Length: 259
Image (cartoon, rainbow, N blue to C red; front, top):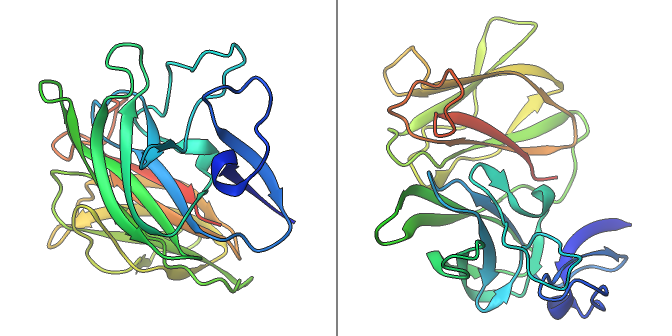
């Protein structure tokens, strides 16, 4: 049995009592699901908390037990719906991130159009720098092109660049038991995704570097990849800031599980 988050309005699941406008549901699916799978990231620097919409349908939300829609949403640096995919009908779709707070409630701050194909998976990112005057931020979508078959001898890992002022970056992985680095795909420009690369089971240190440089823009240590799983490593944040310290907008390598 495969557990997947979905919408009552999209899959015909009866809404849970007390959810009101928060239409996001968890349902158990025992038959193949029709539609595309979509994951949502708020990596827009300084962006407010948002709910994500597909057209006019809200597809992510914070649960409410008061019959009043929550004024909190997906914060900067977070992945919606607990890092789960949402099932969206195939076809041309306009995604938007809309302010969750009471002030400017439901104002779209970014709109991303994408044609979805049945059975495929996608990731939608808010990115760039939030403009407090226009109340807009950039966004993009990529296809998550990992195979349906599972190889239990290795993990699949790819790199996405969501850092708006970075150069094209190369992600490399070094096993904690070795000294050699392995390239995870090729150079990846902002708002693009690399290919999935097989890595053996193990713990790795990760490095994102611009071409021709030996000093990483950002490093993340002791990242464990399990066989049969699929991972996306995404760089986010302001590339002009040091990656050390605690600044929320510093360059950072996010680790998200696709499967």
